[in-house]
Every structure is written in structure tokens, then in C-alpha cells.
Length: 225
Image 1 (cartoon, rainbow, N blue to C red):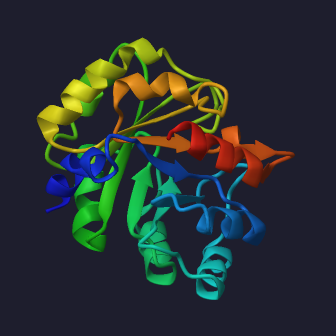
Image 2: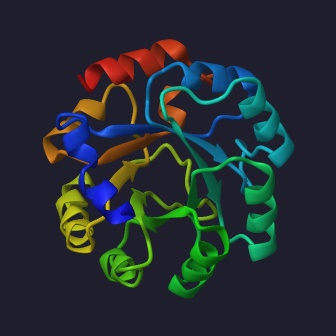
């Protein structure tokens, strides 16, 4: 069922990529993203300038529940199983995004333990396609991101987008959706349209002074048509 959903993502939105607005770190951020109409909102539970706590997100979502079937994505980097179990028990997450070097066996354990949809981040590099193939049959979707020394994501830097079709081909073989992250912003998001992506993941590209900027969000959504 999950894989069938992934294959249909683009068709549902008439060829437009779905948006995930990630890195919400305040109630104000959440209020802005909540009414944006995008299908995915992300919260980071890993070490990051955008890190949030279980209690914060639980309270925000309780006070202002998601609208229009918006899915809530929790982002983790090399978490312990106990940490994930605790967060899932306290926060109503729909999708778990594993952003570190978690193994296929670990993903399988997480799926068995939580029953949640699992997205795996693949960091662009020479061996990334082979890495992606290791999760075939386990990951329910992928996000290709940029990795810089000492940082797992949120770098604001784009990878070589000419390589996107190779990732799309592998995702198609696995019958799961593919999102692109890293350095996506208002003034370059239209460059991604020709790729007909399943989804785009944006964080710093919709921020001003470390907060979500509603004008930037609206502009980015409009540019996607």
C-alpha cells in the first residue's frame, strides 16, 4: 500500500512536486506552515539549530492540529531505538525520516517497532546510488540531500542536480517516491520542475532571520504552479 501511494504522488498533484517544509522550530513556524497547504511538515529531533523537543511538538500539534491531511515528518540522525520509541509514543508522527548512516537492518527494526512510514536520506556522492540500493524493499521513500563535513543536512547547499535522473531511475525500480533537498530556495526552485520530481524538501530556503518566512513560502509555492 505504501509503495502504491509513492508511485501515485505526482499524479495526485497533476505533475507538480509535493512540498515538505522542514525545520519548524517554533509555534510561529508551525502556524505558518500549517496553513500553507503543503502536504508535509517536518520537525527535527536530532542535534541541529532547528532541534525541537517531544513536548514542544506535542503541544503545538495539540493546540493547532494539522489541516487537510498534512503529514507530520519527524527527522532523526542515528537515533537509538529507545529514543525513537519514546518520541513516537509522545508525538503524533506519520513519517520517520532517518538522516544519518542508519543500516537497512536498523530501518527494518524501526518499521517493525513503530509501524510508521520510513524515509531514508541519501547523501549525494560517488557511492550514493549503491547505498540507495541497499534499502530496496525497506525504505518507503528517499530524500537526496547534500552532506558537508560535520553536518548531516540543513546546509543550504545544493548537490549536482544533473544527477537527479539517476536517483529517480532507482526510485522507480523500487517503486517509491524521491524528494530532493539541499539548497532549494525561491530563486532556484523552478530549475527543478523539468525533472518532474515526486517531492521537494525545503528548510533554510524559506527562512529569514532563522524563522519561517510566510512571504518566501507563498512565493515558492506559487513558482511551482
